[in-house]
Length: 192
Length: 205
Image 1 (cartoon, rainbow over the protein chains, first blue to last red):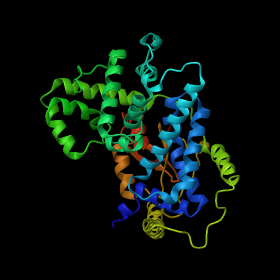
Image 2: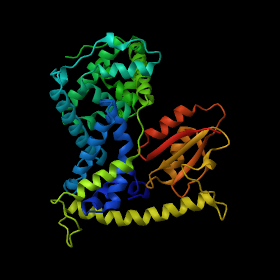
Image 3: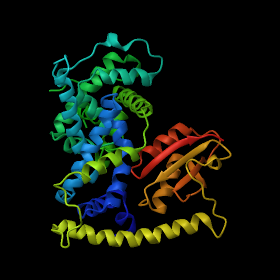
Image 4: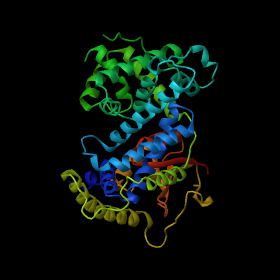
């Protein structure tokens, strides 16, 4: 094994997890700090409530602390942790919606382009445009474009087939193209 | 590769996670398809906009303390390391690998230290120190200790940055652009996208 392979970030995280399984608190602190910022940014894209992000992160790492010994290395550590965070976030978002006066099913949620107002910068348009997407499509976009995951990793994180990931990405791109014409891009294909 | 397959794969060409085979086939298609080329540019614009959208930044310390209180209050959680923990073969291997890793990291850290500091000329800085600002506009960054010298050099080359100072006792590097007209925002995106990047922020002169 080369030194590069032995000390790659993925290998290092696997070893941290092995130490966490043995109740090593310093290893847990290191893994928590390593993931906190990116998880926090990712979750704040799903809801603007900072407290929600903190709750999901701590719920996620509660599972990491208690289930580290069950991790078998079949997936990357980041995929495993993101999968836990995804399920916790989805659960929390659905609970929020069911508790609110708006009982619209989360996968069918669709905002109006009228809500966009007149933002002056592309990133403002994008931020508001993302809020109009169903949460599954928004998460797929975030996992690909903000977190940098492959299609297969997103399938593992979200627990769905690769074809579903591609379909969600397709519909997200289509909707954003309609409401954000300044993005440009080509006419779409038609999915079967 | 047909148009439909190419169009579907474009997001993972844009985020750099398409396989080498997919990338080669897609690039061949792009040479012949103006629609897909336009779509690549559109998706790049979308990705850049998503990566630069600001969010509330926070420090993890307080959240971590809350979690430790929750863990420590849980009567079901074992409070101490068991004498003979029940391990899977995979876990046992990983534990052994952790020891090897520690030795390798020690060697790499020593090499890093020697290559960056020389003798007594080391200039340690902290994130909050006023002395950390470089003479020109630059970046303050922290990387995972697992990052090797070669990986760090490759990352800085990709970002168009060089080391102007550090690492400090806190592991903070002060980085400056290799050229005067370098796009610092793009350099920050490259750094932040790397999995070994723990912190990267612009600092003024």
